[in-house]
Image (cartoon, rainbow, N blue to C red; front, side, top):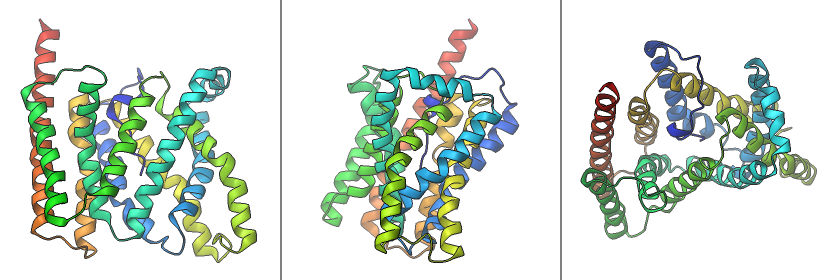
Length: 310
């Protein structure tokens, strides 16, 4: 799953009206939320092979999208910016690891842990913003992070082990978003070069897999079609998110981002994953922390608008 940080949405003068932007954002987050159902169909192969195919098939789809949006010249200019390419190489490693963790969790029947990871993610963003970027840390944000920490602690004490995959997904994506903020690159352009950087070693790796008998692309038309579809499944929600971000405030996007893990949570329950009282307490504490976070986000946005109006 590639769920972008709302703060990374590209600045674009062609804003959509709020209704159409809202519909685009909801569609994008819904696809992300339902994506575990798609990746469950790829249980015939490993998470590593899926990630390799995901990069290879995403790159041409993104290239077509950038050409259609008249962003191809800006995309090529990145090649002359060594510093930006180095940063994108680092973020490519992080997003590739995040993709692997997501697909591994789905294919091992741990969608609830995926959901937990992406619920924790915005609260981890707060922690990074405060302790690394010296952003404001009011009492509401402190309470939100504290509740999330209690949720993780409950998981360790009552379940007997930390939610390793959930924390891996949250940490890898938070690190990805933080590093991406250090460069001024359009989200589409950045993701294109990240997928290209992953795709370059992926192609020989897949050729080796096929020749050694470990690949599955030539096992049949169904397997090939599903592996090719990993490209559009990566790009489509991203495009919808970008369209939505053009017409919605940061506060609205911040609230909407919880739609994807909420749907993932429902998918995990619907597919029969274990969910006991201990898990309910963990999620309850995380959700309560998110409610506090949303309250603080909306309150801050209202104060900012009042200040701007005066």
